[in-house]
Amino acid sequence: MVTIPYISPELIIKAKEIDLLTYLKNYEPDELVKFSGNTYTTKTHDSLKISNGKWMWWSRGIGGKSALDYLIKVKGYSFIDAAQKIIGCSAITKPKQIQKSKKEKESSLILPDKNKTSNVLFAYLFNRGIDFEIIKYCLDNNLIYESLPYHNAVFVGYDEKKKPKYAAFRSTNDMKIMGDCTGSKKDCSFRITGENTQEVHLFECAIDLLSYATLAKINGENWQELNLLSLSGVYSPAKEIEKSKVPIALDKYLSTNKKVKRIYLHFDNDYAGRRAALALKTILPKKYEVIDDPPKAGKDFNDFLCIKMGIGPHKNHERNGER
Image 1 (cartoon, rainbow, N blue to C red):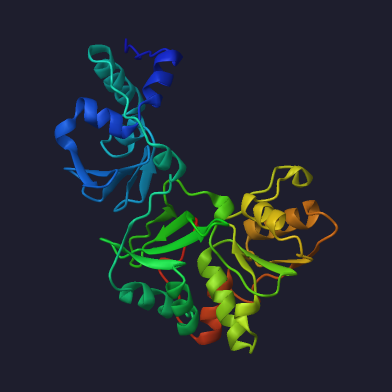
Image 2 (image 1 turned 180 degrees about the vertical axis):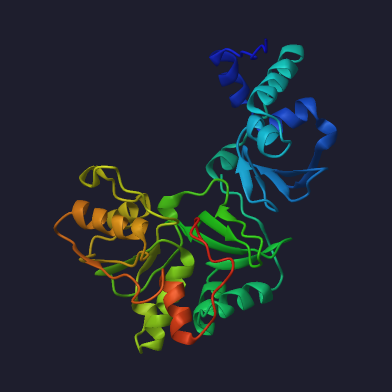
């Protein structure tokens, strides 16, 4: 008869409370390497960065907060084995908690290092049809950059004080690594702001946003007048659509931009995109004119742009986060 290990809920809660920096400093100090300032890495994985109570393994697109997350996602432990290891270490030596400064607590976004050049990023976006001027505008305004050491595309969102609070990364090769950077706040998602304060255009991801701006330029419009907002991923309504909540990025935008009258929905031509559009048309206040404007061809606006420009399909064209 096989005995299934049992750990009480109380002990599991305690195991989850220990952050990775605290765990490594107390129980695996030889594995911890100081990178710079309050940021650390590990001897085994130099692309794994630990900062502000969180960690991010950039080469794999994996992140988390706790030591438990690390043991499971990086070291390959089962949940039970990881919890038992942490509890066992704590039972022998009570961990000394690492005190975080007020500045550390307020600045929780972990951004990857920035490459000195943007050649790989530029080629990646240009090959997906994004206009040269639009790419340069985003680079000049620190909305996008190329990361080190893996040359990922990073899309950055800012708060009202122009401080980065959101970032998504996307591999520029065929590895299909993508996701939000640890500590990202979706209410400060990637966007381009323009002069037409009465309208806002919504997208599922940054690539579609940039594709729409490119299409606007091709059609002779002034793309810099447009307010373009990414929702940082596919918006999922409630099972009963009328009970859905407004996406946090849009809710924040509307609360700080009172002149908005029209909201354009540029979601995908798939079930998720059509359902998301229906939900927002249902739940947004009647004071807004809500216009459903999906791409005229292809699954999304980057597909549509590529079709229009005669660019072939991309092997790594996916729908997970900021693709």
